[in-house]
Image 1 (tube, protein in one colour):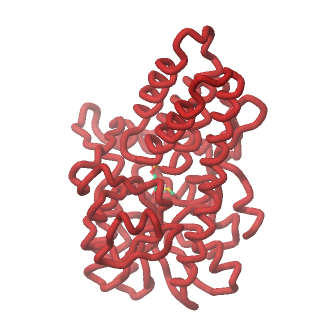
Image 2 (spheres, rainbow, N blue to C red; image 1 turned 180 degrees about the horizontal axis):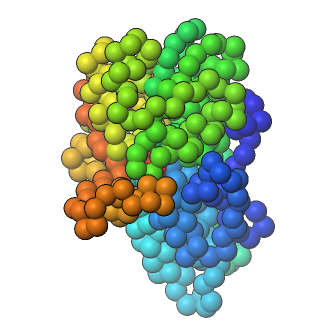
Amino acid sequence: MGESTAFRSVHFQGHSVVLLDQTRLPEAVVFIELHTIEDVYQAIREMRVRGAPAIGIAAAYGLWLGMRGQPGAADLDAALDRHVRYLANARPTAVNLEWALQRMRRNWMATHGQERSVRFAALIEEARAIEQEDEVANRVIGEHLADLIKEGMGILTHCNAGALATSRYGTALAGFYVAKERGVNFRVFADETRPVLQGARLTAWELMHAGVDVTLICDNMAAAVMSQGKVQAVMVGADRIATNGDVANKIGTHGVAVLARHFGIPVYVAAPTSTVDLGIADGTLIPIEERKAEEVVVFNGRRVAPEDVNVYNPAFDVTPHQLITAIVTENGVFYPPIDLRQVLVG
Ligand code: MRU
């Protein structure tokens, strides 16, 4: 895969977390260094790092920073639990955050009784493993998706499920990188993805840098583009997949899936197995983050709605499993009827 996916949106260097600040794109490529757990919490909340797998990785490293900043060793286990709860609260919808933190917690508990330095070393190794395993999973997801991308196809994507949102390569966008490497000609339509514009600011930037043919459209243009026969598949990521296959993803994904069904276009949801939540029966139980009104009423620094207007700003929606053609993970491509337990083991 090309150099363009070689950047790391979240990484650990020395004793700090290094983030490619996604709030600054596309105008500026700025890396920031975070030294405390509070820094990491804020960066996740402010979406300097965003995308389900990326926030899980950042939180894992953030947890280590929190433990390292622990002055006395009075009750390290209680401190760890406190830090886990704190970070898990940063954003509620993407299960990868909680998944990564619980995995870190299990690692910590497994080293009980060992020297502090040994426990700390094991903990940071676990965070590194979470990052590395995500990269491997994404590459495999990319191979599976690329098998679905045929010569001349148009593919619509929503939000940013790319290298920026993960350790590397992305989930839904990984297939584009592999297909390009294979020499397939295809075209991507990127929804701008109001209100935070992940499609315009991030997906367009990332794909252009990789030399992928990408065309930006406003969210409300998807039906027109589909009706013109320009889209043969929809490929999106996920923030949480419930046991029945319902998928939480960026607000607007559900609408895209409804349109795709109308036009007979397949919808593929790509995610690593860390996004599957067998603790939740169906999509109605997925917690949906609501974000501040400012994201909707202020556009490019300018107020675009009356003062005091009522605003509803859910950051995610749930696409019912009936609208999804297949779920693509590192374990394969799963068509209905999907047994999520099978998705986890491959
Ligand atoms: O609010 P965001 O930008 O974190 O939302 C991100 C998405 O909805 C992505 O599609 C999802 O996390 C998959 S990222 C591989």
